[in-house]
Length: 436
Image 1 (tube, rainbow, N blue to C red):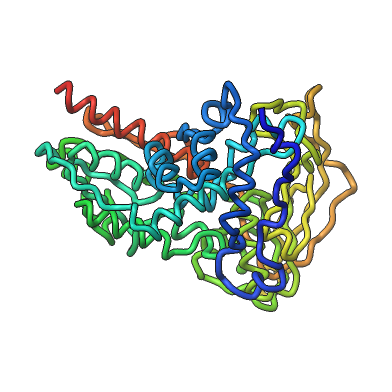
Image 2: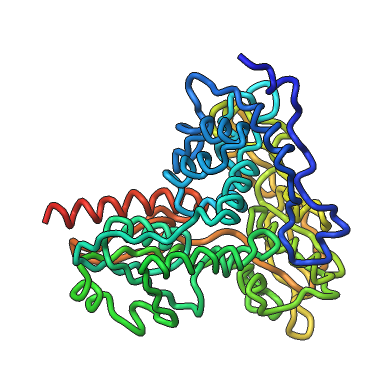
């Protein structure tokens, strides 16, 4: 077995310089040379049991074989392997946390293979060489409606179209993409990448109907009667609120309102409540809009520096992570409960918080917290963003030809999981119609 995974070090500097990237909205990751990534591909151990493929990747990408093809400069072969399991790898290669890397065998004692950047190289090489082409499937005479054009809706539409169905995607917004367009800032995912994929889908015969909210502009009853099947892929559009006293005061917004341009953080003291990816995106946008100060708080305790015993390999490791946005500016604090919003002149002026103590399991998993008396304090803020996740919607339908996919079915999760689940549900819808 090659010892390249030992002798070759994983590349650490994956981002453009902070002073450069925080002043623009271009994607934050730097460009890698082909030789850099070929060398990184050599770190793949080609394990007997590739946990990256099975336990890690929800799409079950054939990662060791893709890595080997990249190392041999067989990029067309690598694209054929990647596109056989992943319909939109240009998205996962940019915004996926790389669950596969958490299951990489090289990562047990060393650093995992940098799979996501290798995937992006394969994708962009494929687009540059015109290997990504519209599909022209034989039509089976049946029609399917897809509600929502986020990652699940797009994945379901591509799968069903390839099976010969005439697919119409209904989207309430002006453009396709859902979370990809309206929830992820351009410095993580350029919107041109979404437009590129939608164009290929349209050329493949998939129709998009915009400005159409199902249940308002068009009824479910109409869809179930006029289409052979309906796939609900509307995601989790409702953000989790914080019902603390003073919540109604001005200057308190949901994170997506900020990410969609409803308010500016320039010269403001910004407080972000919530420590996940959406909160991190608010940090990055606040930095670019030149906020006066930025603080992100989280009720959960600070994770350990290394892999927690509660998530042994090959599970996705629970550990402290610092995003590209968090490296650009602002501060973070942990184990803080929000008690109330304080207003002055109708606008928020501060937030009272309180420290909490967490009860941990024997292996370090937080399970229960209690507020610490006497630790109340007021954090100065004139702009507050709530980034505490989203609520799973309830879908009431009794038609046998209606299916639910992605976050709409499972609750808020990752883009890659939404795509994988949508592929499975699309296949189930096909099997249902075939059985009929």
